[in-house]
Image (cartoon, rainbow, N blue to C red; front, side, top):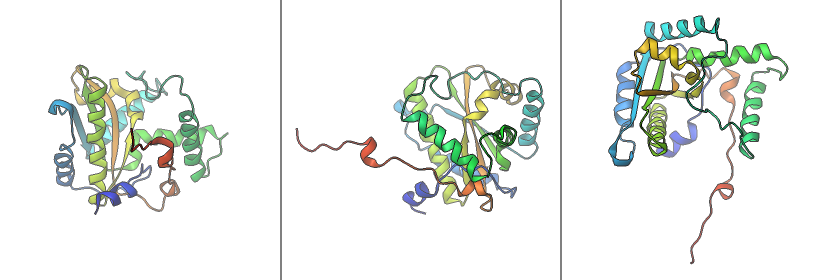
Length: 224
């Protein structure tokens, strides 16, 4: 698969088949993904991979905690800026509405919307889940490095016929995750990722998010 094909076909899948994945494949993906650039070659990423009973136990623990704190634990960072401006606010609203519309969930149907959102904490049914962390001493530059590592994982997944969904929603369960996985205090839990085979029959997986035109975000200059 060409890099351009991997980029074109990568999408955030929110319904997976239960078909198992050979963990050797995941290990190979991560080894290759680690070629991601990082300033000073810090390689600031860390990843915890869960499948089988380990994955199921994290899901069980989160569901148990939801009975006490339905909206999760206060995340350690702002997933979105507190006062999001345009055009970003509209883009975030539009993709959310498109996602629920693809499943036939009306805006006023809060119960069904919540049930779908909770699927985040089941890795959307994917057989493999991953949790990404970063050392607390790292700054903005290293967060960018972590993002490039994650992007490599997602693109390499396409080469293996797999799909992914990066999930910052897991950040709201950082205390539960830390206790279960014995994550050291110096590591901040950034997000999760679902990895598996897409259920192409699921309506939500037919959603194609739009992108701004190149002219909207890029400027080109030849002469001084």
